[in-house]
Length: 400
Image 1 (cartoon, one colour):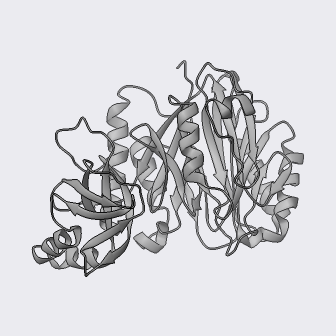
Image 2 (cartoon, helix red, strand yellow):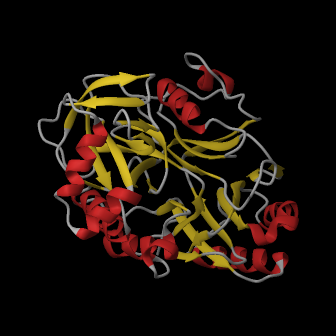
């Protein structure tokens, strides 16, 4: 039997079209998985089918779980109880009892997040020790999540930050961010967890390298890649195309990305050693490529490709690597998954792909989350806003 002083997690989804019945079913399901009192923290993700009822759902769950800090957002598709419910009415509720953990809610309106040395620590009155960990949800139209993540890294270099951009909206003002008993339409909501909690992360970027690592030898306007190893990058791509098989030729035309080194101390590079960024434009006259990331001369880069098979292989490799790294430690107590809208059944052709892979490698751990407009997670101890990824946060006691 589990001790009442032990960290406990539970997760469930409900698919009733009636929002009250769905919320009640999810609350009863997570209560049935917990031993002892109600939880301290609840993550609520609601599909856009419930848009008229967002305020009701937040207040109703808070009525049923009056002692929790509730946080979450709107979503096109949700993840809960280890299931991925895509494109139809569903809500996900993942809860945790967190003895010895202090929870600090955070709310930023619009793009007005704290900037400057120790600005987050001072603004939200977060103690210097122990290092906090963060779960964040942002509106994709009003919040510069990439800059926000960089500021958090600067203020808390030893912390882990995970989260995602709300989905389920077609235009500005339609996203919903939940915090406490309020629903917000812009900015960011988050929670800092501090004390007896450890947050591990797994970020599967879904790509594989092609060709060889190269040095950036000329850049223009920070984002225009002019030369790699002294050659126009488009010339390198054309050479890769000439020597590729039929599958890779198709991907070079439709799913080409650039990997940027994150560890300059490496002498050899493989899958997972690069931050993956979009190629946003190509100039056939100059041979240049425009990259959705700042570049500088001397960086090591490598082209990458992505498709369903590659994405699945990368996820398996990341999960297996996590299992190897943690050695004899037991499974985490709970987990969150923030997956790109471009993954799921649309990419793989089967439901629950990433959740099933997680269960095979990590175990029957309560797992909740949603499909995002952008995923927040670390690569080599630096936090980024990603696309096409699955970013997992895995929770366990710090003292275990």
